[in-house]
Structure formats: structure tokens, C-alpha cells
Image (cartoon, rainbow, N blue to C red):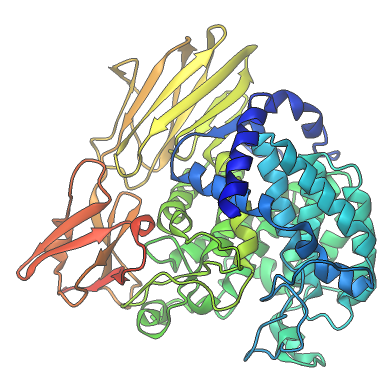
Length: 614
């Protein structure tokens, strides 16, 4: 059934893609009706402007798009219809998604948050329509909004443990349905949904200790995430939902406990739930855009720096979903104590969002460096969703690690997975009045108007397995503008950029965007050859001899006999088996050890970190 649905989708998508820019022109006219107080240095392209080409990112996006397009509408709407007292045909999806008398946290999480990911599935489909122009996808988005509308009632939240958590996802689903799929009633439905949830929300954002101090029937009621609400409230306000959404965003900004100390350089992350507090940094950034208050930019920037300072070599963070105290060595100790190392689709989605926001605000290429680590070493290697709701949730960096599905069906990571894969394109390129910025090296094409010329930039690459990429410029008339290339901070001195076969005179500075400004003509070519060094990186300062091997942005994982001891020198002598191979060879006294990328690992045991001599 799934394969048949996917084939149908691919045929429809191929037909629709040709007319995508024209057919969606009016939809993108639904853009923000209020202007930000701050204009970021870089702008984001529309989803329709960027087309992924053949490669792992496109394959993963297509798989998720087809999967959610094929999900039964009645099953998705069932928990809402049940609570509203309406006919509720269809099977239960199960897991976290449907009401269940078995819910007994933390022992049994069946029935944990009924309908919680509906808004994320709606959001992912709306973005997928914006990317592809697939008419069946737009029709499904609008059909789901129509089906959801009559279920909106405060009854849904009676006895519900996480009202803010689920409503936040409903919010993004409806405003994305409005913005990207042109749904005519989405904002009206959002306003009714907001009326329904408000009686169940506190007066302000609550910390978890504050929630624990309130009366609660079970521990799950202490896990709500009111502090993530402002981001999507601000987006709803900017997309025309009304002034009250700006006021609601302000109401739920967690200034005293979170943003004020972060803005002052205090690291208040230790002990906090990892993903939701990274997601909350996005609220700070939207507050900065809307209010112009620099405090919120400092909070977002400092918070992200604190996250990166305790990240694994993969770019992932938050073992057991918790940030750790600097200097405690707890990140390194987690390699022995847990297999829940990084909450992957959710964490990668939040990471991409805040990195994309900060890159736009600052033009700092290190945010792109961070995005590519997370891309290649976590989310691109996620196991695909299964029809029964089995979802990849944690990346495992334990000393005896494996890839596995979460024990519960339809968890939160099933909602962020389609959102982040739909966002691959808008994370790859940015622009300003001077030209285009190439942030990620993915097979793709971006199209835009520049100085009166219609321009497309097509990127062909097998990066990072092959340390090079090529870009071809197509335009209907010559035009002068900048093409800026992100040169990662890890890039070695032999990194080289050529234009039409001639080495450019611009200095290649690792850790920066290198601008190439010239009059571009149709068919001009840019080639980048990266000097991609092999290096080792310690898990944390308290475990300097517990190291992972990287080549450029790729973290490499040992497979096979994990008992073989490898020295630092042997790791640094690792060599790729062949050009473009996903296997590296490390030679030891006891024979060769194979290392590979996270994406290529299937069911075998693996190890990321190795104990080496000083």
C-alpha cells in the first residue's frame, strides 16, 4: 500500500513541479502582513525557489512526503472527533497519538498526548506542497483543516496533560496551511483553537520546578512546554492572524529565568530539557525580529554557543534529553550509561531553525558549519518511519551503539521529521541585495531575480564523500552580483575555488563566506575543492583521551570488532577506502578496522568514541 501510494505521489509531483512557481504565486502573496522591526542581513528563499536534486536529502524528503500524503485522514482526525463527540471512523493510530486508559506515566506512555503531532504533520505537508506544487498534497492539507475545524472545542483539553505543547504544534500547522498551502480558513480555525486552549494555559511561561509545585494528577502534567509558545505566536501575528498573537507571544516569553541570564552570558542550560530549550531560543529570535530588542538576539546567540560547547562530534547534544553542567564530565560519562544520546529528528529540527535564524541575522558562517555537522551525522542517517508509527528517536553514541526505533509509536520525532526534511532547501541558500549565499553543499538548484535578470544556480556534488562541488550559473542576460561560498572552519590551506577554470584571487578564509563578485554570464562555472583534513575531537574536556574521528564535517563510526584498541596516531592515519567511498580504513597491530558514516549504518553495532593514549 505504501509503495503504491509513493509511486502515485512521485508521478503527480513530477507533473506538478513544472508549474509550481506559477501555481503558487498567489499563495506566497500570503506573506507576512506585518513588518519586522529588524531586517536580518540575509533573507530566506521561498520553498518553491529551491529544488533538491538527486541525492540522499531529496530521497529522504520524498519518502517522508509520500508517507504523510498516504496517511489516512480519519485516523489523523480521530482523537479530535472523539473528544468533540462527533462520529470518529477509522482505526486508532495508537502509541502517543490516541486516548488510552493504559496511560500510566512513566511506566506506560500509551495515550500520552493524543493528537499532539497533527499540527506538525499538517505543517510538513503544507511545506511539501510549497516545495513541490503537488496538487494532491494541497488538497490533503485543506481537507485536514476542514476536518479539524468542527472538532475545535475546549473539551479537547479537559484532563489533557500538555495543552501548550500540543497547541503549539496546532498553531504551526494552521499558519503553515495558510501561508504555504493557501488554505482559506486556516487562520479562522486557529483563532477558534486559541480560544479553546487559553483557559488551560497558565498566566506565564512556567519552568518545570514551577509546574511540579502546582497540583497535578500525574507526573506528565509537569512536562508542558509553555516557554516554546512565543515563536509560533509571533509567526501567527506576522502572517495576519491578529494583534492578540503578538500579545500572547509577549506573555509567554520566559525572560526572568531564561532569556535575561542568557543575554548576560550566564549558562542556565544545565539540568534543562534539551530540545525544548533549544526550541525556545527560536522564540528569543522572533522576539528580536518583532521588537528590535537586542537582548533577545544575545540570548539566542549565547544559548546556542552554550549548546555547541557541549555537543558531541556529530553535532548532536543532550544525552537523556538533558543539558549538563560545564566541567562535570557528564557528557563523556553518558557514553557508558545511556543509549539515548541525541533526540534526533526533534533536536535536528530545532538546531536547524535556530542556526538558520542566527545565520540570517549575523551572516556568520559558523552556523552553517554547525548545520552541516548535524545534517550528515544525525538526521540523514535516521531510520525511516514505518506504517505502524515506529519512529527513529535517539541517535546512540554508547560504547556499544546501534540504531533502533523508539519503544512507543508516533512519538514527537515523527512530527519534526517531515518538517526538517521539507526545510532542507531553504537551509541551503540565502540572499541579500548583493546576491546569493551558498550555505550547504547539496545537489540542488536555486532560482531568483537579480538586477533584472532571472538567475538559476545549479549545484552538482557528492559532498562530503567527495570533497568538491560544482555550480553552474544560468541567466537570461548578463548581470553583476555576488555568489558567496561558505568555507567551513575546518577547511585546510589547500582549499581552492575556481571560476571558469581560473583560480579566483579572493583569499580563501576558512570560517567565513567567500564572496565572488563579477558580471556573470550564462553557463559560467564555479568549482570548489575542499582540503578536508582528518582530525580527532574529545567528547569533553574531562575526557581528553575519549575521542571521535572526523574528516571535514563527517564523524566516522567504527563497525565490526569494537574491542580492537586504536591509538590516536592510528586514527589520524585513517584513509578513505576509495574516492567517494563511505568506508575508511584504520590499520592497527591486530588488523584493519572499518569506519563509516552514520547514514550507511544499518543494523550492525558501532562505536563513535575511542579510548586512546595521551
